[in-house]
Length: 407
Image 1 (cartoon, rainbow, N blue to C red):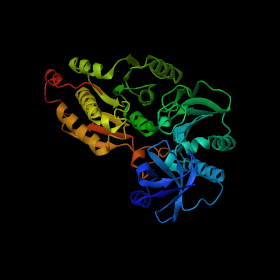
Image 2 (cartoon, rainbow, N blue to C red):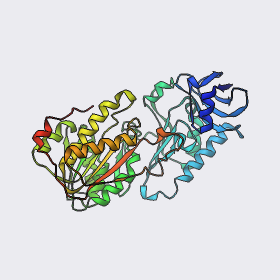
Image 3 (cartoon, rainbow, N blue to C red):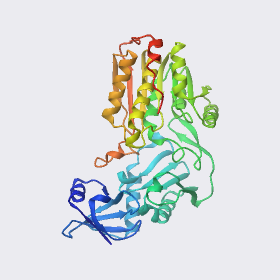
Image 4 (cartoon, one colour):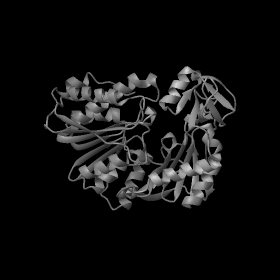
């Protein structure tokens, strides 16, 4: 089984890109998930890759050069190497990503740990075929109570794979509370967002906790309140936590109580509709966290996402107390860093906030960015600090006429 690259595919391979697209391959043989030999147009071996005939991404690189040991042995070695790279992350508690797809040399394999539970996703045909050996090795190395296959992302559709959730090893664990940073949090592996929680925001959560002492905090799109709990643990004077999910807010209230923290004020609401009213009422917050869902899941959605991000950030900056801090996020890969920063500049101008310092919060070491795969650099977190203590330039009523609905 082999795949012969054309000149564009060869250039991409030599650049180190881990993906080769269908239109960059002259011809190929093999079926879904096969490990094929990748060759240049003259037939010289370049390496190996997993084949995905149903996907636009036809090849996902596995080795440069020949595979030098049996596939399952190589799989186990790469899992061990990924685990070794996570050593020293004890401050994370018991929640972290153990394996992160291409960034750990295992294209399409994601493994998240929630205390005694491992949640696995196999998002490519190649890794789906190796799910059993991967689970066996993780079971032997880490002795968890359960390994759950959380294979319900839409990305599996593009690989021609069924969407399913099933226990691979161990007993069924529906719900647990585990340490994450300074608090214990509820995880529902079968139904929670992503694989249970948003693990990629751990560094930003720690930052919010360090800034929160004595502050009035607004946590928007809070889900189960990861930022809220850290803010309360950090000594926030009060937190208003807003989300559209009543169930997520109930879990937040339970977790605050179980951690012995003050009860946050929770509000089930549409954030786009809520913010203009808060501005009109003259509300102010010392620390605001804005962590919306991905607005731009493809390039066609980028214009609407730009309008939505600009509107949300403008409103948040209007609500920011003089000298306050806005932690603002985008998890849309299609919204690149340069474009997102320009949106923030325009939102600041709209809100009359001229004296804003900007800092970035990098992803955690358990979510490494692969230099040759820009798509792995999806999470953007910026900290906007009002160092001049400026107020908005125009009256809110005038700004109201320029409001833009969310995406």
